[in-house]
Structure formats: C-alpha cells, structure tokens
Image (cartoon, rainbow, N blue to C red; front, side):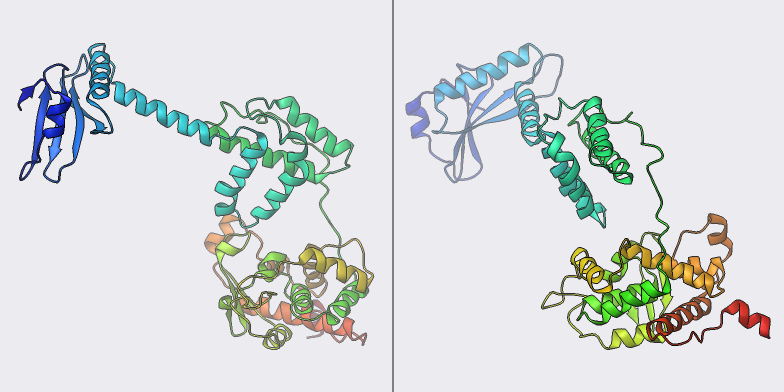
Length: 409
C-alpha cells in the first residue's frame, strides 16, 4: 500500500480506480488510510493494534471531505495513542454509547416503570392485564408514582399498604396491590433498572382475605333472570348464559364463535384459568339461546358493528341488572358459585360439579382418570337449566334430584 504525505490538494485530485479501491497510507500519522472506491466515494480508516494483543483492528473514521485531513489525523492519533496504552478507544466509546442509550430508555420514576411493565410484560403475557393497569392507576400511582425509581424505599410501600387498609378500608385488594408492586419491581431488577427490589420483604397482610360465600337464592336468581329478559343483545343473553353454564365471566364475555361446535363448547387451555382444554356439552336451553343471537363477526357477545371485539361493558351491565332486579351485594362470579351450589342440591357429585366448572384437579386424578365425563356434565347442566326455568316461571319445581331419583328406583 503506497505511503505518502497526504495533503488537501492530493486528496482532492485523487481519481477513482477503474475497479476495486485506491488506498493511500499517510506518512505523517501512524495507521491512517485514505480510500477511494471505483464509484468515487472517499473515506478515512485507521488500522491499529492494542497493546498486549496481536490482531490488527480497523476502524472507519468517516467520509471525506465531511471529515477533513486535519480532523482525520487527530482522530487516528487519538486511537493510536490509546491503543499503545492498551485501550481500544472505538470499542470503549461504543460501550459508553450503548450505556447512555440504555440509561435514556431506563424509567426514572415509579410511574414510568409501571407503564413500561404493563406495556412490555403484562399486555403480552396476561389475559387480564387491564386489571393490573387499573390497580396501579387507582392505588399506586397517586402515592408513589412521582417518586424517583432509585428513591423508592421499603417504608414507602409499607406506608402505602397501611393507608389502603386503614384509611381506605380495603381488605383483599391490599395484598393484590402488594403482589403487583413486587412483580413490577422484580421485572425492573431483571432489566437492571433497579439494583434490588425494595418491596421484596414486605409481608402479606393476614386475616384480611375474606373468601366470598354469596350464593343467590332462587328468588334472587329469578329476579336477575327477569332483569336480563328486559335487556337487548348482547347484555341480556350474556347474563343468561352466565347463569345457565356456570362458566367464568370473561370466558363467556369473550366467547368466539370458533369455540362452538354445535351443542358443544370447546374452551381452549389458553383462554381459561385452569390452563387446559375444557369440553362443555351445552344444554338445550343454551343452544336455543345461542341460535337466537345475531351472527355478527367472530365474537358471540359484541357491541362492535363488525363483531371484531368482545363485549366490554360488564361494570355498566352489573349496575343495570342491580337496578332492574333489586338484588344487591352480588357479583357475576357469584352466579358461578350459585350454579355449583344448585347442582349440589340437585344431587350431583362434587366430582361432576368440579368438571362442569373446570376446576383444577389433583395431579394423580388427572394422570389416571381420563374419562371425559361428557354425559355427566350434560346431565348436570340440563338439570340446572330446568331448575332455572322452573323458578323463573314461578311454577312448581318438577325437578327430581338425582339422589331422590335413585331412591325411587
């Protein structure tokens, strides 16, 4: 490679080669090269060896004339001198730039962190991520949101939970807030946004988790059904299907038509809490209800004109049903408990009820008992549908429980 004492005049007059590249090494600056390609592009490069290593390293300084001869020599000299001291200057600068970019992306406040956690983790991985987002918005951001991420302390989290419990009178929700704060901070630690989780040792509040035991009596259940009768699609039919099937609220609310196979509902593992495929034979009352619904888009229950989004007005729907039925102090999940209790009263075994509800079962039972229980589930749901019909019509109950039926045989 020719070595010449480069000058501006020399650089400006350098002509492109017919092929390949013209490379000129500067006599005045160790390792500095001037390069001209066949298409006329001119640029600077420096070749250097870091002290203690044997490999030749190359670094492109940039184009000429954007980078002048004087600036190219300064840059090449800096890289060469650093290499003599055992420092790879371009690599060091690259690492520093990457760290600065990471720092610029790093959340600076608790609020920033929670937003990032919801967007990057909750949305892709949680079916009900909206609830996590609402929990942060209602209970965490107003108190801790403005605090710097590196300023947050264990005492701040404890004080927040104390206030939620004593001042706001929350019970089970306090532990949910604690769990979601810990989860977000653990996520931050994994990504080097925090050195340690300040909430990791915050203890769970005891004796505040009161499991619900609300079961609607026949009169209340009939009142809710009649209230649903006054509501148009999709609200009324949605409430009725919750009552008749005993399935989870969001499993019914977001039911796609693709899961329905005639008189069978095939609920896939990814869309239910038990994380396993669930086959539910539908009683005639449910089949009739579904056949009467408008066929709009991929979802059974929807307010979207094209049916591309599932129904999302459960809070407002509950308020309307409360007002129309005059039944108070219940939740949509209580309909599930009511169905389970009703099946028990009709004489069905706990095993059949658990399978209708798609509850988790012991590992041993799952491994060895592979019976589908399809007929038993169908019989249970048919009996439940007839019972609901009898209490709604206020007629005499003509349902004979399975236990009574066995005794009369």
